[in-house]
Image 1 (cartoon, one colour):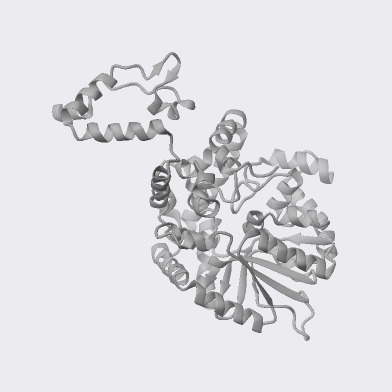
Image 2: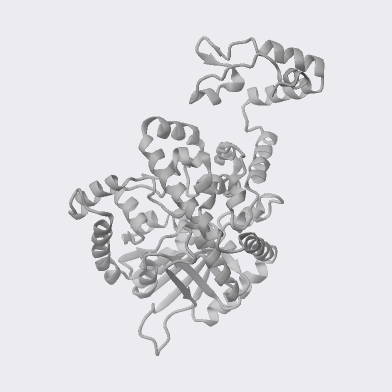
Length: 464
């Protein structure tokens, strides 16, 4: 199963709500737990001060990105790593293909990486004849199912424990009533052979410190450390927005990201990778390649408003709090990044026409901004893309005409009051069909009842 594309969002969301109520149950339970842990973890620190600091550091880097990228390349090269530049996904995959052919790679293990999902790394490697295995437990589960991830941090949170029990019983021979620890143990046993046999380890990069050329990776399972140290070659695919100026900045970001994502003070494992193993070291890869990936990021950076989305640290907090995401999970969004953050980076990275209608997949309640650790003004950016959609003629003509009519009426109080009086007596459903202005709303809801009096009438009469 692959992503269906953002253009199918309405249909896929409706299908999930109608046909898969268990997905909403699993997603809601998991995201509520994540968010409760975040609230507790943020209560232990001066969260507002940390978030202000993180916002300012990331904004500074994005304002001087060319300088920090050059510094990072220089330091990584001095550390013995090989640096590659990929303007597009195709460029990144070509670089990876060259490495595979140069070293005769037959098998690869992968650490969890949303960028690798964005690039389509697995399918590309398989087309080259490389056996690829995801090693994060959630990613391993959805790989066995042939599904894409449904969440930035928890790729399999749309599945229940019983779903996993059935899968592991079929694929790994565990009992149908196995406890979660037993399932994890079976996956661990199966993956050990994969780690030992792999020629290539692939990871992403949570942060890249420019001053020392250090790729920082956060995890809870230990699989990233094995993926980056056991195979003889390690390739880290890192988005160019992942830079921070100094290694000491990484310390703050590691803690803030973990608290926002899972409510932990810090991830169980933190790996700081600068280059291949040295002559006097027994562990580590023979070669380290760092692929710095653009793939639409500079286009997003050039947008006067939307550039702030590049501060994202991929913690998933905005997904966890979003009432829209909780109804459908991530698959309905149709591409790698779902939820509020996906809805504001998709228009720049995919193109606004292809990303429609994701900027409208929000109630604009603002909860996502309240929990964002780097203070991305997500509702403002959603409105920004909606305005662009109107300017480019991507919204329905009926909506455009209706809003223009409303604007004209709103400037004429007497006509506005008269129109409101008429509409209050018109059934919202005519012949089983909703009035155009309510058509989308009433696809999944019953018709609201009209008030007998207008708000202004009640205001004047003092009715609460």
